[in-house]
Image (cartoon, rainbow, N blue to C red; front, side, top):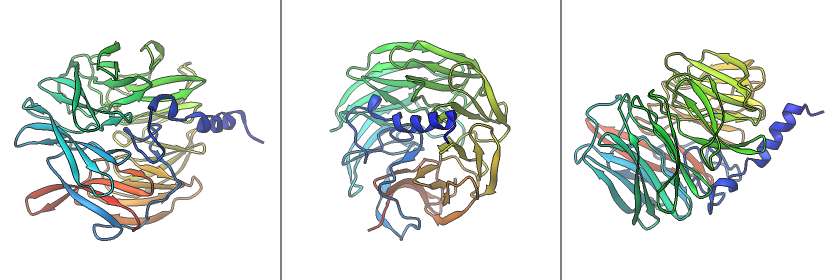
Length: 417
């Protein structure tokens, strides 16, 4: 017999449909950070290969100019990717053909204006674009401020909006999220940042929320919880829920930590937060706005975002360990060694979790709370910071290959031939 909580989790899985905020995208697309529902879960209608390398199950691979840690996104026949060239001091958006990897257009968004320093793991193109089927949107930190820029699918610039001035602490990496006619963007920083709802048609500001003066790197995510659409945000010592249509605060409680990188996930009953400064934490609180903390531990899941499946929370920690907890109690089901230091977030396909560490070690393990089992170990590239994208049975991985001191970024399309 189903418990009330489990029934709510199942209902959440059914109603958490991307149609309420994503516009004209299809099941075979990956239109924004962490996919259709912001949850890192890919459509399992076609499973990607378990085994692959630079020479096995490669459909195509292409060099990517410049450097960036943002993930690709996919709409129809197009792949969009942000990149930055350290020599020319340019930040650009490129479009590639999904079938061949050929670059179909590249558009310079900013020239000059690079900050003098940032964290060694940061890049000047760490944000992931978003696409609503008509336009593609990208945010960059440039000349002391964060700007969001829109292009049509042929590469024509439509608009550019300044979001906020930005005092650099470690870098900038937040990605835009699509909601109905709006684009939700964020830029927390030490000078006092903002979360904004921009009108997608012209970039004008529909609403704006001023944020505390703390550095924070979490991207906005939108879920339907308790019958309402909620923009859930963590960081600046807060867990916050806003109405994405108008920016009005639904609820806000003290929680999380000052600096967060990962994106919140939910099972429809709880919201799960994680952070790493000034303390490590993974926590669950009720998603009803009561602020009730259900459980917490001190695991360091600072950068990679987590996954929820069938009442269990799965994570790959910054040190590469894989972990599983029970959603409602926080009971640790297992903790096992998987990879080495990890920045990219894992992706779930069916009951397979794909995870890659910073040295290009791609591991696949089963999302099984009862036991830990590695299904495959693969190697692709020498350095990986970008979260891979999996859709329509293919893996799109942004990696670095080095020959001596020559560094070259590449985008791989992995899939059975």
